[in-house]
Amino acid sequence: MSTSMRLLMLLTGIFFLLYFSLEPYMDMFERPAIAIPEDIIFVNNSGCFLSARQSPARYSPAGEPINLLRCRKPQLMSARTRKGANFLVPKAMLENLQCTYWVLAAKDFQSNKVLLEGHFSLKRGANADIPIGEGQQIVRVKCKNQTNDTIYHDVHFFLPPPLRKLKPNETEKLSVMVLGIDSISQMHFVRSFPQLNGFLENVHTKFFGYSRVGQDARANLMPFLSGFSSDEAESQTEAWLWERFRAQGYGTAYGEDSAEVLFTTRNEKKQFPSEPTEFYLPPVLLEMHSHSRYSLDLREMIYCTAGRQFQEVLRDFIAKLVPHMRQRPFFSFFWESQGVQEYYEFATQLDQPYMMLLKSLQEADILNNTILFLMSDHGLRAGDYRSSFQGMEEESQPLLLAIYPDWLKVKYPQAMENFERNSHSLVTPYDLHQTLRDITCLDQLQNSQIEQRNKTLQSHLPENLPRGISLFLPIPEYRTCELAHIPSLFCFCRKHTEIPLDDGLVLRCSRFLVKSINQLTKPHSQCAELKLHSVVMAYFMDFGEESFDHELRLRVMTLPGHGEFEATVRVSDALKLTSSISRVNPYQAQSHCVSDPRIKVLCFCT
Image 1 (cartoon, rainbow, N blue to C red):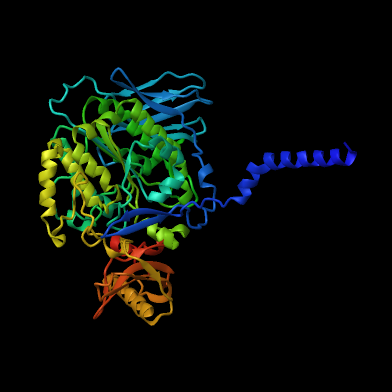
Image 2 (image 1 turned 120 degrees about the horizontal axis):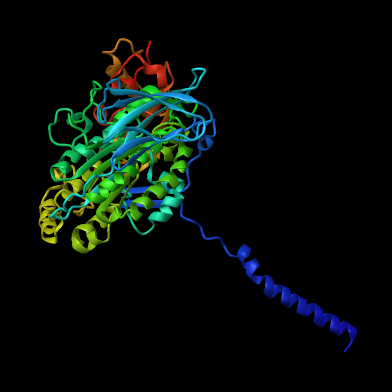
């Protein structure tokens, strides 16, 4: 065989070797990439179509590294209960300290009401535990060194485990726990909680059509806990949910990570009953807020006490409740707001703590007898992200998911089938209220009861549909925002079409919106009269072919103060506001001269 022939065969062999060995890699470049759908369908029925975007809109992060900030003062003590007695457990001291402590009532909002004052010394090196008392207690501690500098200032609370085992209930009861995180939309949760989402995979039902019905936390949680809007609730005497559960033999608990309690009346008086829940965290946070708090961030939105963030105090409260929850049925409500209200990126800090919290509840066997709602009130309400159209949509798509034991599906198959099917229905806080009222009497979830109640629900004409429908019943697929009592400003079931900002009708409606603001602030002479500076955003809202009305969603900027306001205006024979007026940029000290929260968001103080 000639040399040239051998060379040709060698080259041919090399070619085939390279071709077949590289073919899989070539396919990676030649085959078209599979497109990941950007839109997720939340609700798609005759009454509503809702979707969301997976990737976030652009936003400017905080000017400081929020995710890296830590409380800068030392945590020198912890609270422990042993054999019914309460102790302060000190760490090893680096210097000698003289400490004073004050014992307060466990449920008293009067932070200056001291039951007992005492003193103790801490020596450099090892120290013995300091006995404080017994039972539920709030203890504030302040320690100074030899040069009279305050080295440690903190508030501790004692929540001892139950002293004796109660007799088991004769009737089966299902505990309820609400874990609330302010300003978290459905998609914000998906993006910011990867570990928790992984932990919850296949063990929960997410309600994609959950919608807000009011502007702030109070306006969305009042319907959930009372069944009434925030305005209606002030004139009602019906029981709060925790009172209903307490009447059925449940233990009750309430906790926030803020001293500004969510449920206050317009005149700022506490709207809780005279006897609050059995276990009650707000007085602890009020004592911290008054004496030991300091800010973690430059904008003073996240607070610490000694070496702990306020959110850590809330989770410690939940942990101390676990022995009580194992003993008897409980209705518990917890709410976290600091940080997540102001900073888009802060939510990622909560991923691991909430995963660990749910894991600890699972290991303590709490979740086997509890329906747990992980929820929010609305999406982000201010900031760069909220300024985008996507941010505006997500504000009205708060998080709601439920975790529940498997035995519920076995014992109440029809009710739980409806519950899971409603995951893609239009749902509101009014529905949640009715759902939890059902849980106070589980007999209502029997198949025969569900069938009868469903017949009653179907007998209603659409215009007479109840405002709140239990999630254990099938929510009609024709339900619209109007039928669900969702104001126009918070409804994204209708198609939104962007229109030119200089359109004559847009300008006319924008001036009407500013005029409406001035009419609301007119009784308050300290508020300046606002002028229209510019139209920031304008959308036409499609009512469908059956309607002759037109409705515009507007965002305007006013002077003085550069306030940005949103509302919906309906155009028919005359202009009419069809929503409340929402402030979408920070106003901080601009409204210091008024206290009414409805006016505060609109007022520029002169």
